[in-house]
Length: 478
Image (cartoon, rainbow, N blue to C red):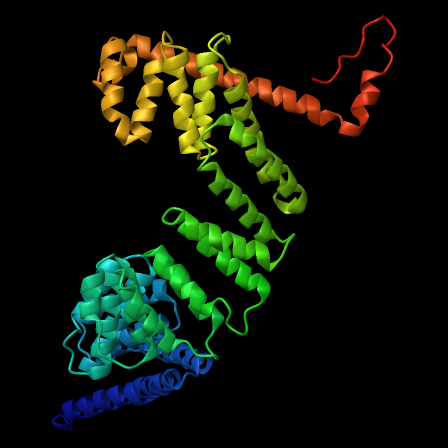
């Protein structure tokens, strides 16, 4: 009996391991196979449910049989299942152990792909790409193509467009063709990119899919994204509101690179329907583009009238339009009323020029108003600051500005600041300008409150209201 005892232990141990496999890992692997097939067939919901069962079965093996030789395999398979369900935070810890786990090559590569996707999803693309690179030469064609696709996609997303084009695997599936389209468009190869897009668009395509591609491409090449918009804007299932939204967003992307095409987009939106939020936004953006070309304060008057009309046509945007309208009126007033004899005219003109530059985004007007300060107020300590502002806005004026600064304002605290010498005089001037700006703001706010407290249709009644007992007359609204 003593001779048979060790053999009995061995048989019990083997039997125990077999039970672990058949009761746990066999079922987990069987379910994983079914989940992969469901994914391949496009049955996403079913696949997600199956992966959930895989995670449960695998976890059971890890918890109940932590010393089993199948524990490592179960641990990794659980990570794959969690990753497939999009639960990357929980998937990453088990997947991180794949490098040292003793598992099959197939599961190891599947785990590396899952690890890479989850690293990208959680904001660590470098770690994700490091996982994909390990599989670029995999003997498994599916794993190899997936790794090549993910690697190329990360290259494009980090701006390495030419490298991405060379890294994209040769394949005929829509996903890979779409990635090639995005890489071509991002490099500026718009004609071949759009030819590829035309071959991909079908009547049954999802609008959401193509709208997402427009947004993704728009972050890399706004002109290419606009060309794509031309192709998809009238897809059969797109409503007028959805079409207006698509065109409006395209116009907003185009503003920094092509104002003429942006204006065309905004006009298209306005033509699709009046009195809508999109039409109101488009109208406002058109007026903002008009401000970019204004050169004289007098030219602001017609824009102010258009803003008032737009506020009535687009009530949801009335507040935003009103804020811009108020700034337009302030700059207009300052520009037409300030003369060399105006008290603190240099300060008022400087603040109005800053508002034209920063709030109205009217660079030509701002430059003209800044230039009026050294011309109309040559002795102003802020004249050098205005010249420096123009110099920054208009590189063609650099030499003239330098000559003027060195010849007339060589001792200015602002020039000392440019030379890296911060003086007390500089701080005093800046504090004074800041205090003046704050006082102007308080005065405007007080005036707005006084006007806003009494409706327009009651102001004449207030003016005619009799004085209260004691002879003190109620002040008229200012």
